[in-house]
Image 1 (cartoon, rainbow, N blue to C red):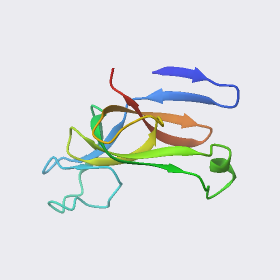
Image 2 (cartoon, rainbow, N blue to C red):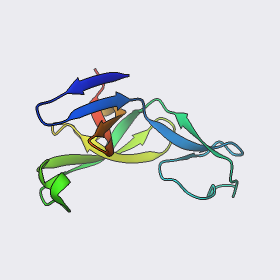
Image 3 (cartoon, rainbow, N blue to C red):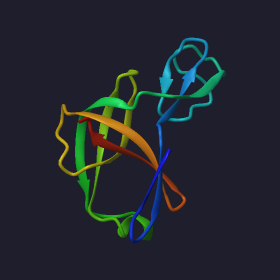
Length: 120
């Protein structure tokens, strides 16, 4: 785990983890009650590679509340991970559709955020 500190907030970086069904091995980016593939309830949190390709990207210029207003404008991306699941998260503003990226989780204040950065 690495820690980075900025002038306004401290963020802690951890690997990305998603739910996986133990019965059929399907991955889930959200937290369903049951697996939509097989109906199983044995969903476990497992680390993923975090490597994927950008499917879509957009810049947000209107915020839903004060927390996000302080971060305007910010960029979000939809990324198809190698594990076969699509995840939405924050992104560097210079990413391009089709570009390979790596995801990590950051804690910004009390908000856990997924962040995508280009793969070197």
